[in-house]
Image (tube, rainbow, N blue to C red; front, side, top):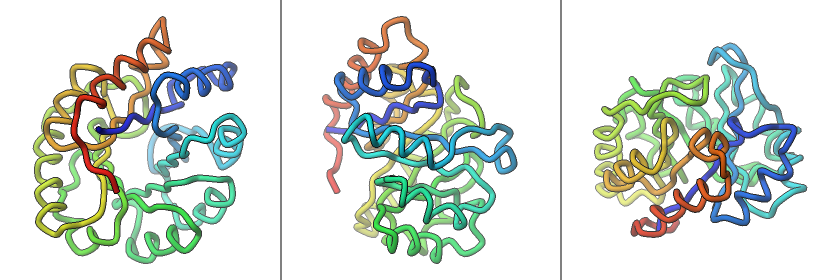
Amino acid sequence: MAYLAPSILSADVLKLREHVQTVADNGADYIHVDVMDGHFVPNLTFGPFMVQAIRRLTDLPVDAHLMVTNPNALIVDFAAAGASLITVHQEACNHLDRVVQSIKQHGCRAGVSLNPATPVNTLEPIIESLDLVLIMSVNPGFGGQSFIDYSLHKIHQLKALIEGRQAPCLIQVDGGINTQTGVKVLQAGADILVAGNAIFGADDVARACRDLKTITDKHTGRTV
């Protein structure tokens, strides 16, 4: 099976407890927290306090996606807040290996994200060190965007790289994910779907979460 990570970027923060508990009860495998600094991306969202809040609401792993200019400065705080997985952007890290090792040294799994126009081969030197690679299938910064079709080619490329190097990492995809695009990215080789608006923007959050979980359950993904 593959995995589902609802993104609280699209949740109603005034209903945070309700929304987190609803997705936890309806198939979510992770809770995805989009952290934006208003500089690396044109939006400003959450800090470590959000991870702390979610930690009080669920035992699900918290997946912190740092869309920030200086992710290395935030690793200690997000690890202390209870993040299970910290993902940084390749484009924001001058010393990516150092950042990845710091994430692991602070007790978290390490992921690296690629923006839509960033080639997969930029991760070749470090792929064996990663627990996860996140393919952005929209330009980061806002929820509710449409899926970029050439992301499918990047997923195929990444899967080939991972298998060729026998790297122990999962492929996560974030942006424009719904029941239609979700099937496509799973078929291309993804292991984890991040979905925000498709779940929290639905009239029935529980049903929307179950619908996406159904397609991940049908997919034979990898477990690391």
